[in-house]
Image 1 (tube, rainbow, N blue to C red):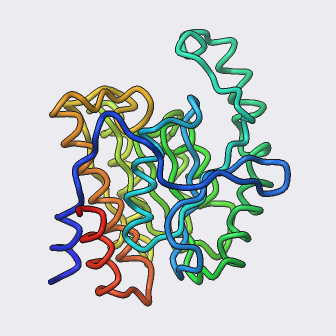
Image 2: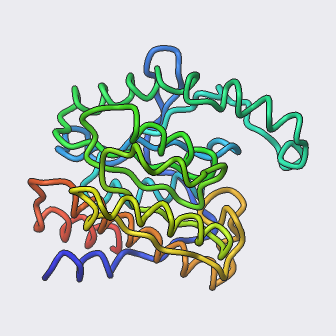
Length: 258
């Protein structure tokens, strides 16, 4: 079986989900861990502004079942934004300039990435959702030693964010307006040595945040698009991370479906 064939058999997401990973701490920050500790492939995940949610856990658990070791820190310490906050420009401006900024995020990114490496990962990538996509994109500019990153329905991204990216990037904007800006940014990425590994995929038939807490996974269309996104994520991280065991992936997939 080819790797692409294995990833096409990723189990469908479910609407009512109980997380399979473990909660613990790195320093003072609560974290969610899933996948096989000791894997040579680690993924640091930056959740969206609504913090922890079964949808986010489920995506991470599926990626973990495919051989990646996943770390999801909780830097908000249980105090996420609310839906009302998103409609309040003053609150959002304060968030973006303070606890939602790269300045506030950099330390726990470094701490988490170091943890994954010390746990056995020789290749580490980052994954960000919504607001976390913006922060992850900055991490791909500022941090050394990462193999790449993915951003899912990212928020607050501008065309200026792409020029300094140092690694392959998978981006999944959610509407046509964003897509035009991303196309301009990706035209620049394609000129870089790793440009052929970059991928841009739009999701225009679902709501913003469909992979996160806003996603209603009882809707068959949304659930299918989530599975499409997971397959893209798995394939992308597989392609940019070396020393992968095809047999391990297939075995993990069989176990998740039985």
